[in-house]
Length: 495
Ligand SMILES: Cc1cc2nc3c(=O)[nH]c(=O)nc-3n(C[C@H](O)[C@H](O)[C@H](O)COP(=O)(O)OP(=O)(O)OC[C@H]3O[C@@H](n4cnc5c(N)ncnc54)[C@H](O)[C@@H]3O)c2cc1C
Image (cartoon, rainbow, N blue to C red; front, side, top):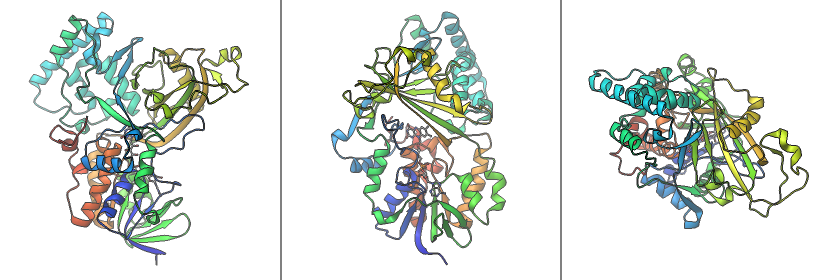
């Protein structure tokens, strides 16, 4: 006997769980419960900010009007948001190449421009002759961009992001939507010595003014009945056949349907009767992500300017991406009058030359870095912060003498679900069996493991659509048709 029974139990109050709950509430269902191991709603995007500066990372792009409506309802005032233009660069060959990289290779040394253009010509010929589809992500890169761009940017960058060689990843997750770069445009830009960003007319994004992205999800949770949430409780065991979830406080919840947003590989481990699925679920591949933040004293230097996020394909830094977090909202940093001690200089050997004992006013700015890790790409976790400091100096983000006022390092064990060569086969076994045999809808970034539909807007809608599937048998568009959702035919998409 369970201590409590509900129609729908939701594990996780992140974007997916909140999407499921929002839809149930909208449809006037009251017999549901959301259980989360954390102390409040928000999932991955909600991370307690360090005391001096906030490093919540996520940027919102939307593919859905429903999602827009929900976040506008939660944060309705114009001053709840800042709108930004995407200003993005790739650090390559000691310079900042505006994104998209291939359109701006005129910034590269001439021999690299030649390699890139020769590779693109070869690739165009291969594409014209090819009868089959590329067998993996690496073949896809070479066929779309050529070996020049592959070697200088795509291969090293993608290994830094995924911590998995491109030869071991599928390319289906990219869908049909990614076009080969225009050889004409690339050559014309090179001959005209032109460099220009090419994000298109809607190249803007919104960011919450306060509380980072986690603030959005806390606000969405507030629009739901609070008695539907049960925090600080971990689901530790699921009796699959009996449909009872056991929680860390010793209580249990019986359910008719379960929407689980915990990682699929972890869920299968705690379902009593799902031993037969474990050989498959244990082979799902993911990488871990380290998020590192630094708060810096001083006026934002011109070398940083209005940059939003920056890509780092080369091995002079451990991080693959840096975000100038203080550019997203002035509230992402302490205000200038706040007095903070300097901890060290970026190069700690210079720390003796600055005052590290007294609290002094700002202004301040901040950077947030991401580093991937896997068994194929180990990370020296203990020294990662120091290695990132060196990387920020060698890539020109920081000067050796810059004063660091705060640091932050957090590891997300499940960071990126890897689109491996065998992933789709694994998901075809796992997801239907959990649903059909145990009434478990495993959904969300790691619940359904599909990177191509694992951003916040996707995850939220995956939750909404799981609810509609449970209640009405409706099609789960996002999970089943990522190409449509992410493609140009989807007129709700804002990119
Ligand atoms: C480094 C990084 C950068 C990202 N950047 C962006 C970005 O810029 N834009 C964007 O849109 N998205 C971004 N994302 C993706 C975004 O974080 C996800 O889309 C979103 O968090 C997925 O929501 P979810 O609800 O599926 O999972 P989660 O957010 O992981 O929520 C799952 C919840 O389940 C709970 N839980 C897990 N196991 C249990 C258990 N056994 N019992 C009880 N509770 C449990 C957890 O505590 C958590 O609250 C990024 C992700 C990472 C890692």
